[in-house]
Length: 366
Image 1 (cartoon, rainbow, N blue to C red):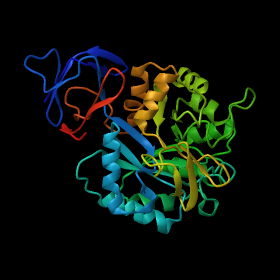
Image 2 (image 1 turned 90 degrees about the vertical axis):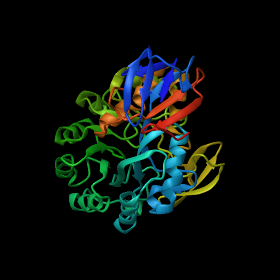
Image 3 (image 1 turned 90 degrees about the horizontal axis):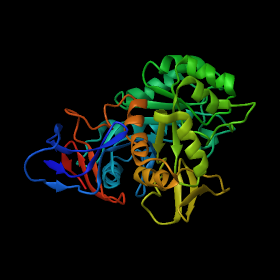
């Protein structure tokens, strides 16, 4: 397969180049012969990597429904995502375990690749629980983490924890030897957050949301993440974070910035009533909230997030990097880059960032 005529993203720079590939990329440069796909005037970018997505098209990973995983894989591929982490909510162990089993046993029939699990909780703070159900919160418990990881077939790549909770620092020291540990849904001040990063955490879950604000005398988790060199997530749906803050955060964190969708089962669906982690949510004008008005996750795709931040003023190359290579690096995935010998996970966009084609391991899936 040959894609010719487009601007290809290498690292954080677009270059005029052609690409040949089968399952992996076999050649990059000015290639002889006809094109199988003409990308002239458009862009060839790495497949996007969504490390924080709960679901879409009426399905949610926390449901533990094996039959729901293929529609999700198809949805992600149809929106430019070629790898994702199945993200669960704060739930009881007896609910999370079947969700782990479903991911462990999933054999995709095409679509995007499930690259592992993100446990968003249950080790979170009551005060900053957001849309997480309070009755399901659990003190940081490495034994529980290990049981869930085993149930997933060893596929947990990311876990979110509130570092001020009792037992959190020993939890971080132990669990960071297994997967990436992220600070989130936390009331931690700067010193407590720094203790979490020094113990082994290296990431922050949906920065600004579910944590204290960045204040000039109290920088909190945000200031600690900057000082620690941590990677950070942003929900860029235009609702969770003001565009000016997105621009400032890009200037602060650079290549450590990770775009996420934080999409719920309402993504790709009409406004209406849905469920999240055992709680009812309402979606109106694409805004998802609990019944009390608490903002929940989003209804966007990761490609929507890329388009949004470009509209907000970020360079396209930086926006794509933040939705591909950066999140892959944050969770130890070999994905999100275009290079000789790498998997041919590719997305072709036209000049207006409309999707033209998606390839997963060299196979056209969209």
